Amino acid sequence: MFKRYDMGIDLGTANTLVYVKGKGIVINEPSVVAINVETEEVIKVGNEAKNMIGKTPAYIKAIRPLKDGVIADYNIALAMLEYYINKAQKGFTFFRPNVVVGVPVGITEVESRAIIEAGNEAGAKRVFLIEEPMATAIGANLDVEEPSGNMVVDIGGGTTEIAVISLGSLVTWTSIRVAGDELDEAIIQYVREVYRVVIGERTAERVKIEIGNVYPDKEYDELETYVTGIDLSSGLPKKLILKGGEIREALRPIVMQIIESTKNTLEKTPPELVADITEKGIITAGGGALLRGLTKLMTKETGIDTLIADDPLTCVARGAGLVLDKVSILSRLRRNE
Image 1 (cartoon, rainbow, N blue to C red):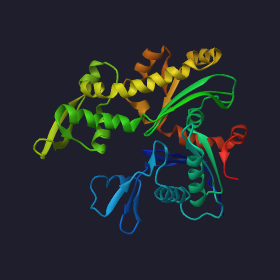
Image 2 (image 1 turned 45 degrees about the vertical axis):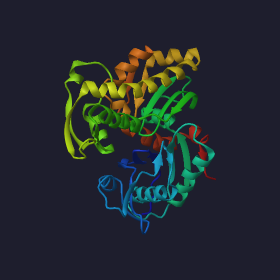
Image 3 (image 1 turned 90 degrees about the vertical axis):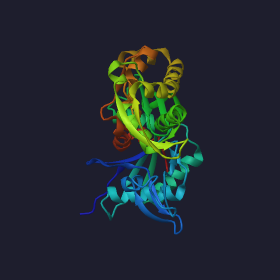
């Protein structure tokens, strides 16, 4: 029996997640494509492509086709999107799916059109675009259609999306291109400046996951991990031990930019909605929400309890999929006709 697999997609800078209606999250893989630069042939997509970063011969290049949450390389993004849509449907299906894609707030018309066209060419029947904060809130099971304020801070790979939502719409919002990638870069720069050692993106990401923290805590200070990089003086490999306390100092300036943007968004929010948020708390999602001490620091700086959404890494994809059942919101979304 033929079946249509309607889906929600979090087309992230770092990872792409696909939620299929009735099945849940079926794909969660890196937004990376490995291509043969001589033939332009796609070799690998997702996990296998990411494993090639920094380890390929000259004729193979591992590319991240999205930058700051939007398409930077259209043809590569199309190949990736087509691969994931087909994989989510497990091959051929008679009915083309309706697809809802989470996008950063405030993306341009050109950027929006690129995503819609890529979705169409990849096999979608209709493509809807939903702002990531709205998708996050729906995925976090917030009552977004009620006349009550909800605040979400979604810290992804390329952007941080901050918004206050009421009556199914964004009331105030801020989108900054400061997120997980900048945290990784801060670690790379710290190791380079302090130890005169160069480490790669994947190593920096591992350090962030293993010992990254932003709030003073003895437990965090005692965290440590090993890294191997290239000594700038000798050009030879060098092994280092990094401690939690020093990584905190590297990451805090980036996180404070996110917190300042959160405070600025609150300042623009009507008082009645701020009262609701004060009662409910600020909800964080995305990979950045898992950074040790982030919620404590945000609570201290804003004066509002800050919580982590259930399964924060999948909120956008789940919310994008669930919005297919919310007619009042779906009718307002930008889509292909």
